[in-house]
Amino acid sequence: MVTLEELNEILSQVKDPEVPVLNILDLGILRSVTYESQHWIIVITPTYSGCPAMQTIETDIRTALSQNNIQNFTIETVLSPAWTTDWISEEGKRKLEEYGIAPPVDEVDKSVLFSKPPVVPCPLCKSQNTRMVSQFGSTACKAHYQCLACQEPFDYFKCLR
Image (tube, rainbow, N blue to C red; front, top):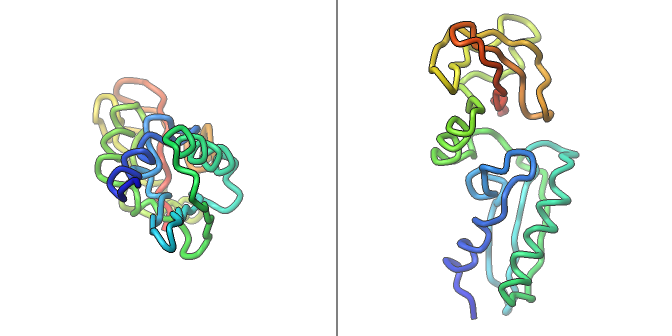
């Protein structure tokens, strides 16, 4: 019989295929793990409705559990409440920055439709002299920025609430 702690350790090995430096715990999409009637219930939430990575993540969860001889589980995807970048762990934010992706700043990015985009520090040189190149980055949850100090381009993980 696997314990909750052991199951969480197994699940911490499941990576986000779009940002492979983050696991599903760091990203905050693993909502809960409960054990009822000799059956594990794993609840996940996509970063946004229709996220193409969720099918891969669910498959990776099934594979990780099966490889550890865990067969008695169900994976549920819930959309409400909607995922928010507030659910990214501090460790996850640190990993994003080390990977070269600026973690979310404390401003909701919807403001770019009506005013200036948020000031996003460069994950490489830490300069705040950056500019948004495009509201749309390599995935829907990221924007593309450039540092004007070191000239390096970088992705920014959009703040969503």
